[in-house]
Amino acid sequence: MGVAPATVTATVKRLADRGLVDHTPYISVTLTDPGRVAAVAAIRRHRIVERFLADMLGYPWNEADRHAAAFEHDLPQEVEDRIFVALHRPETCPHGFPIPAKETGVMEATPPLYDLEPGEVAIVAVPGGTDPEIVEFLDTLGLRPGVTVQVKEKHPFDGPLVLSVGGRERTLGSTVANQVHVRRTA
Ligand SMILES: [Zn+2]
Image 1 (cartoon, protein in one colour):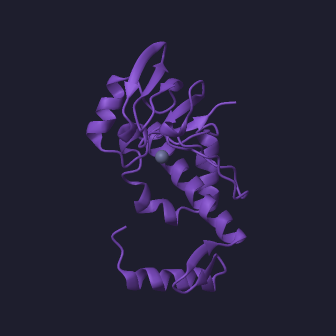
Image 2 (cartoon, rainbow, N blue to C red):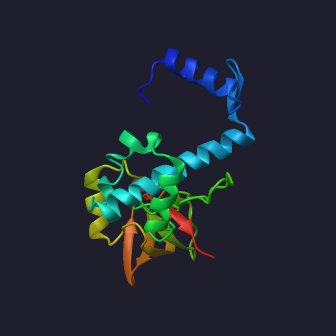
């Protein structure tokens, strides 16, 4: 993550002092229950700020996270709440990832598209850091955040997926299908 080991040690210690992680030196770092609630709240805030940048300020979905980190941490909770309401309580960020409910610490799973089995239907989410050339390629297949796909076939031994996208059959290799994420539909 481009962070010096000493910074990680100091940060983990600070989080442990605040009761957000359990830390066994050289063994593991795990979130405590309050830590999970705080982590999910940070993700919720980030995704609401991305929505604000995309829906109100007009940034394209694949640039929606560019400025979020610059101010999301200083945003007062009540301002975040008002932005959420002003945006009509969106369900996802512009990349298609679900905005978790407030203060529950619960996150909906968003597995890679490649994890799906034939017959499964899901809604596409494309991570913010995805290579722009891959985003462009996905776009030519109609694969954008919020689009519904169904898996028709999955070839064995890491072979490609055959998908139905908007009624058209599309083939996607495992490398790219592992970089796209999905929300399973019921
Ligand atoms: Zn996002």
